[in-house]
Amino acid sequence: MRFIVGGRPLELTAEQVIQAMAGVHPEPFREHIVQLRETVFPPKQVLAVVTGWDRLSFTTMEAQRVLSKLGFVCQRAGTLDDGRGAWLAVEGEAAADRSLDQRIALVEAGLATAQVAIAGLHARLRELENRGSSAS
Image (cartoon, rainbow, N blue to C red):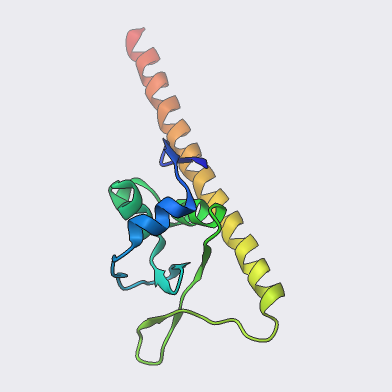
């Protein structure tokens, strides 16, 4: 699939993600996680490993958007009593809640992407306005 992440084009498949992450140990996660086979990772770790990009060049929501569209389950992490992060298993009403969580994650990812794009356009507009006023 093709994506735009941090203003850069990216072409990626689910299989490429799985292959790139084979043998990679998950880092501690904070708020968001993505499940790859039987392991959970921070979404930014996955996208950084797969692309080789600096993590500061994209948002967690962008990473989640890409990984969700590739079919991976992305969701918020929970916290154990001792403060360590944990994968939240959804029980009982799993199908309805999970699809709602996934839809919310996609909306959040879309909003984060839009915010980055708007900020970039705003900065570019300011730059053009500054050039115009200095040329006068």
